[in-house]
Length: 542
Image (cartoon, rainbow, N blue to C red; front, side, top):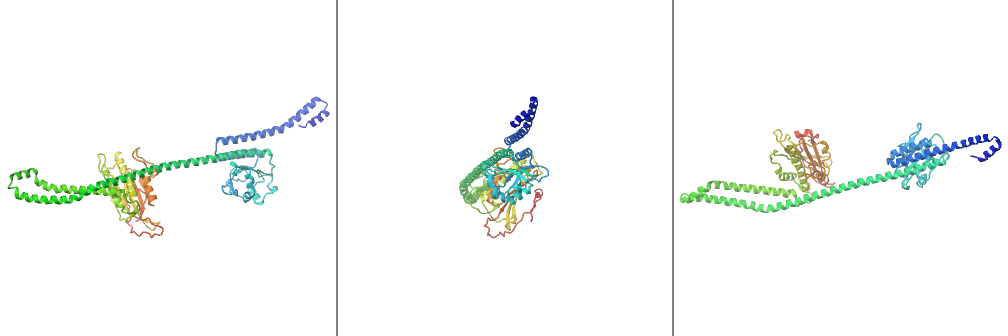
């Protein structure tokens, strides 16, 4: 209020009451703009408070940016408010608007890729230092033509741009656009937008820290999981190695006395035969002369002994052969003396594994015996780590036996006369289109209950098992896949349908060669699809 005007009014007005009325009118007139200004300031403070509250309530930047753009545009009565983000490593030449609030009638700037080399060369350094740009008219501001062209693309006539600098790093820009006409930006408006930008920078920093923390937590969790998996796999590998050493040791210890027995049995048989011949001659010559000898021979049933003794020796020979075969299978299964990759007879590995598991194929009181069907094709020697491949065969065959036993326990059709438990093993060669040669395929199928689809997707995950606690580590198939895929450059797949059974396919290259090596020319012996293959959903081309 101008007090000089009041003094002049007092001099002119002789009526004191009239003067007081005029004075009140002037006071009220002066308070009107002050009240409007205070109201606007209150609105700004409330908007700032809402932004701060939103930052504290949530670190969802998309939602926060949109809410802030709407608040600021409405409060400043601007045509567009947008948040612009620079692309990382673009040297501030490239970016896009990630959020905006714009009046109808003006183009949206959202998701429009902006390339402005003028900005990176001339303006970025100022924004990086925290400078604010307030332009009332882009045509009167002395801007470079390349920068004006970018502004005109978005119909901008006047703009107020404040940098977003989390941790003093130029992340983006808070842009207020006046598109309809030039505009003089007031100091309190600039101060308000600067305050908003400061709080947005804090929100960006917090969101990035949260994202970084989450990434670190994920990496840490994955590392812990990998360490756990590696530890368990190492323990499992050590167990298999120890088991192999134990098996090899036992096989060696058994082999020595068995060889002694086996080697002497042939001599014992020959000696027994000679003695029996002599005894026969002696009986013919002296039994009639000595009643005492004849009586003793009758008590011993000498004829039966002479007939049965060769049979006993033959059965001992057969048993010794059996023990030698088992010992040989144990030694071949462990293969501790073959650390490297060597050509191996796949069928021998399968047969050795079947021999070790033979006790599980026999009939039990509550289940019929498991029938083994072998459909072996003609295979060349395959370069592989024999003991590791035997471990894969053992894992898959053991799982098949477990599945068949489970089917018998739940009263499935197996063993009831309708269908008996069976494991079928097929081998053969298939074309390899990548190397123009052949690959070995080994298919191990059972006719148990099958595997539900939800479980099939997790079969090869480490530690996944459907067996009760203490009956499985969940590493058998995971390690098997690692052996086949990573160690042998092959593939291991499972095909199953609930109620029909399960079949595992193992594919292996015949040789592991350098890229310059010639492709294999082994004659193929393709596998013919069996009648049970129709439900698997695949077809083998002969």
